[in-house]
Length: 219
Image (tube, rainbow, N blue to C red; front, side, top):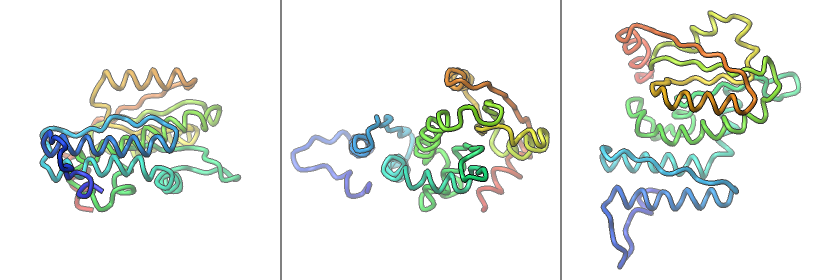
């Protein structure tokens, strides 16, 4: 998609390769959103990205809009716990998990920030749907797990909570490095009618980097 849409047409003013890329990418996202009856988020491309990184970032975000339905089903098949009737009893949401599932050809293991916006579009959209579909299930509480990259947030929390972990209809796993954004998200979850349990996992940064981040990238 990127290489075929970022060429400036004859007679059309160019604003530079990255800005042209953003304009073309936003146009595509708006088109796909209109067909789906929703509003597209604004495309995000870090001005410090190289042109190749900017192309990959735009590609990921356009795909997130275009291919959402199929990617959503693949994600739920892997990360939702189903009940006896096949309905989701618990949905685990983590932007990191979307990167390999949705963009295997763009995910290099060391470029998380490049495809993060695309993964976030997918994660946030599924979260919005889950707030409706999971209402009243389990303990009607969302478990927000926070901690640095590679801290082992999910595995540690499962060990600490034991069987109680299975009672949460939604588990939201995120780094939560921005306190303002975290507070806003928690308020949104509360406004949707859920109680919130918050767990922060603190791990030695060196250990988290070597055993978590590096080992994940090597895979």
